[in-house]
Image (cartoon, rainbow, N blue to C red; front, side, top):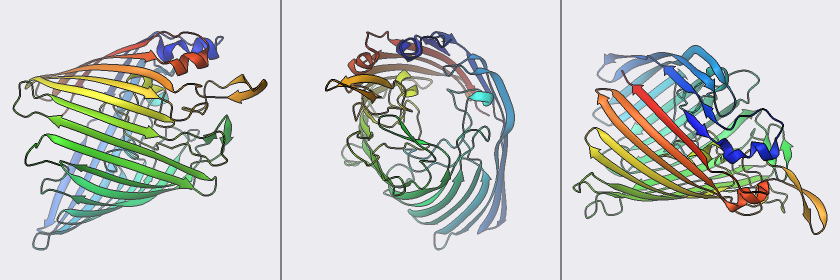
Length: 427
């Protein structure tokens, strides 16, 4: 991993005496061998179990100035019972233990474990399993219903922890599962010590505790017979917490098309996302909590390099992506993001950039940016399958600071460049 002028050099503005190096080079390593056992008890019943240790670490200091650390611990340890009647199509799946769980397309729930710090491997985030889970799935044909209890897998007792429960109902619009899906989920955070922040810089202790959310999602092909490569993906979430007067929302809309017969099989897509920020003029807290979302560049990241700063709260982004299959072994993807603040003078991440400004001739404490434009980001990725199960990824990202960042810093800023070389072996 290579970063040049990380965070656009903002550390030199807001923390000039801090010994932070804006140029960095480090390595991340991970090894996660896994074992899964499936045992058929009868034509209608079966047991399964999985176990996977994980060895992760970093050589050198990463973007959070952490590194030269690693840890070996359990990543997966789960067991389950599967029941099904082929005659009626009814099925029941019960499982528990340390395992991954993803809700819908990962808009709210996907990454169940903390990476970095003593575990290392911050950016590749190989640890994904929740610390403990209790899952139940009832299915009948294309219709399924889940119930879940999840606890976040934090590194140490000093790190924020969250326990949540909920359920979802999902319907497959076609006989091919996962291709076209409609669903709705509900969740509630039953316990959490993660603080929330209110504009301008007020900390709400244990703010996440009691937060509830409704999460509808839909992926479909509106012209599947005439234009089968055209797809639409819609997702949203409304969050509320009566204890702290929270009312927030997030929305995502994506339209894309893949040409199946054209040379290089091009795929182009456009996505619009907005996650509400706290309005300093109201008593209600409107700041969206992205919870444990999928922050990959091909999923719900708000930029390339910028996504490491602008978590999905108080952010509005437009993303254009073009993907080409240069050969059966070579894939090239170019993505562009235009990123802006949804609410001016309101916390973007955790309230960094707090400062005193003059408002109507009087000093006032603000955070965030006075102008919406945050950054324009590019990311170019090339993936080559070297041999069976072995992949080489080359990535380059560039983030160009917008007028909002420069206005908050009070000076022009330097583009933030980053690159990676990733070798992955799956077995």
